[in-house]
Length: 293
Image (cartoon, rainbow, N blue to C red; front, side, top):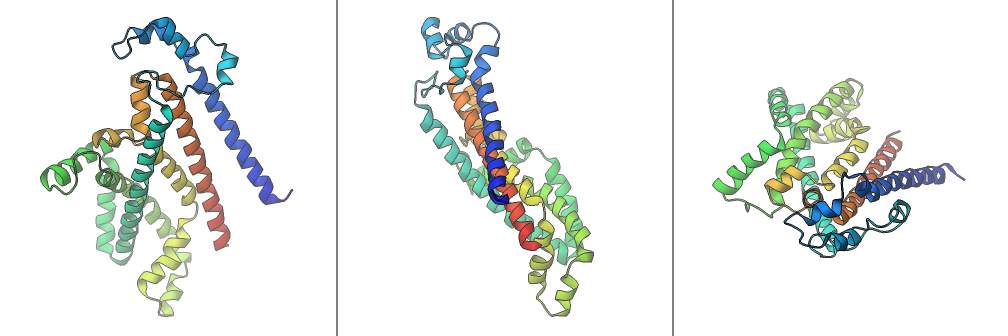
């Protein structure tokens, strides 16, 4: 077995082990809850049903082994709706929000890094502003943007639109990424080939991208993969502020309403998404380092 196949097999085993662990935990949650979950849920206003029927629907009469090695229910415990369309729609919304966030963030951080490289005044301003942006929590930045761009300027709808929440997340991330990449570029600059590029007459912007920014990225691809996974899993506060129904808000609503089948399905989906994005980041990082070496 060659090295590539062995690495792929190890990756598949690692993902399978983490997912299996999450599966066991998710399917065992009901057994760890104090009291009788069916009795507790039946007496809440959201669910008006006999506890015996509810206990059967929650599969509490099954043994632990049977429950762990069986699939979760396909209907919501609270609403009775199929779970797959709920998770699918929330996933699509999370993908849309994450895609816009990454696109805005890459453009913003690249422009700020280029401006700070070409101007010392821009660098000083970017350093100061990045501290402020990185220090502002999204639950403060989001309402500010909502007030300015939606209520006052009228540029975006108040809710159910991905552009403004994506812009909020992108600006928040730009503060962290600018500081990390700018410090990395400062350390790499003395050993870079950018001075030779200047001597050969290479245009300034081209020299910046080819001989400074791209080689400085290094191990940040792995971190970017985890960042994408985090965004796909749901930025709960942003989704609540802008009423964007992604995976984060779906899981939060399911937990608050004690919709256990929906909690299980959403949690398993989030686990798969996270594992895939992390591994994708590692693969991109390895490919990038191999290309530069």
